[in-house]
Image 1 (spheres, rainbow, N blue to C red):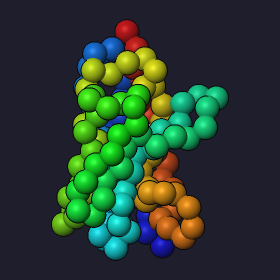
Image 2 (tube, rainbow, N blue to C red; image 1 turned 135 degrees about the horizontal axis):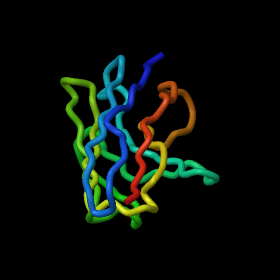
Image 3 (cartoon, one colour; image 1 turned 135 degrees about the vertical axis):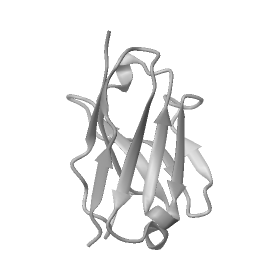
Image 4 (cartoon, rainbow, N blue to C red; image 1 turned 30 degrees about the vertical axis):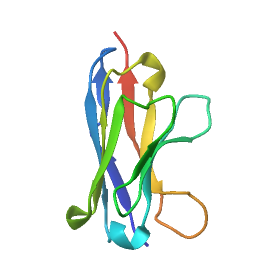
Length: 117
């Protein structure tokens, strides 16, 4: 089963930027559409952006215009560039296939993003 490893999180001030990476142990082309999700403390996991194998992108309203998802199929890696970060972006960020139902990669440990002054 494909394993996913997220990285790049950290502490950033409001208005700052971070770039997260998600590397798969197998082919993301074979997975198809990939997404970034996040889970804030006390809340359910939600999707924030997804990208098809053809690199078409869709964003949740809460991050539209601030986040940019991309993928490098040769490196089996999905990225999200986050800018103009807000305290409400604080969460653990995960990647996985979209939608996240049925057989698919194992969820990784996620990478924690904290937006605070």
